[in-house]
Image 1 (cartoon, rainbow, N blue to C red):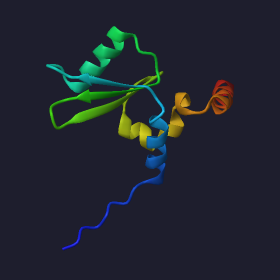
Image 2 (cartoon, rainbow, N blue to C red):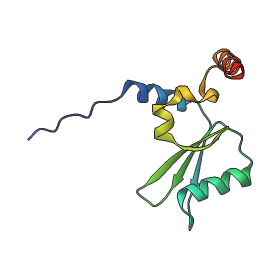
Image 3 (cartoon, rainbow, N blue to C red):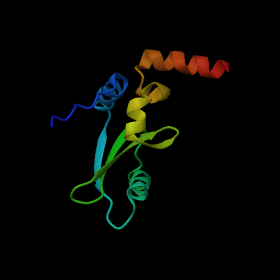
Length: 104
């Protein structure tokens, strides 16, 4: 029986392309949960947003997180909703976004 191919969201593909241009950090979670390991690494290394953290949970699983100005987010959420994050916009669009946000 032939398997059907999963439909790929264009919005998510676009978000993935945008995230490719952001600095990435590979870390091991060790004894901590992946989110805790990511937060500790951000604090100890003094990483400034935006950044993508790839946290290795075990030999088969890697969790992906996006470090933004407003906190730590799952990378899949950011891929699907990249337009909500000002740090992912080109500089000229970012200025327009900040002007509109300050008017509210």
